[in-house]
Amino acid sequence: EPMMAMSLISAACGIVALPFVPLVGLPLSAAWPYILASLALHFVYYTALAEAYRAMGLAYSLSGKFEEAEAASRKAIELDPGDFLAYWSLGRIHFSQGNLAEALEQFRRVVALKPGFYAAYPYIEQTCRALGQAAEAQAALQQVMQLLPDYLMQNPDDARARMVYAITLASVGRRDEA
Image (cartoon, rainbow, N blue to C red; front, side, top):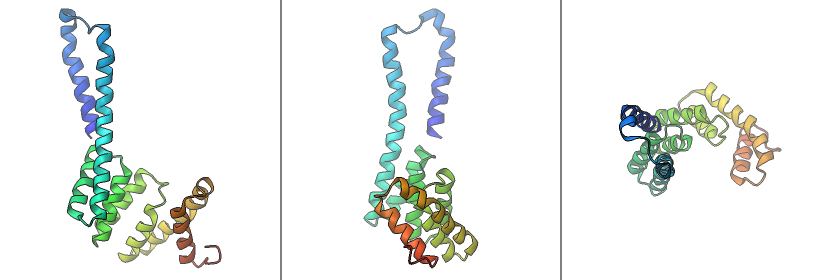
C-alpha cells in the first residue's frame, strides 16, 4: 500500500537520522512548519492522485475506451486500495464487457469496503443471476431492500436511489409501492 510505504520510508529516514542529531542538532524551529507541510503534501498528493485516476477511469469508460479505463481504475486502486469507488468503476467496466466473474469480484470488494453503498447491490444481483448464483442474487436484492428506505429518509432528493428502489420493489412484485 503506497501510503503505508510512504509512512515506513519516512519513519526509517527518521531512525537513520537519529545518530546524527548530536552532531548536527535538530532542525531550527522555523523549519518545522515546512517539514510538516511536506508530510501533509505527500498525503494529499497520494489521495488526490488516486481520485484523479478514478475520474480518468470513469471518463475513459464513458467514452468506450475500456482498456484505458481499466488501467486508470487499477492505478487508482494501487494508489488507494481502500477506494471503493475505483473498485466499483472497475466492476462496471468488466460488467459492460461481459466479464461477469471479474465484475462480481470487484463488486464484492466494493461492499466489503463499504457495505452501505447501495448502488453496488443491483450490479451484484444482476451479475449473480447471469452467472446462475440465485442465492447470492437474492441476498443482494434483500440488501437493497434493507438499505434504501433508511438512505432515502436521509436523502429524499436522490433521484437515482429512488429509481433503484422503485425497480427493486417492482422486481419483487411490490409494484404498488414502487
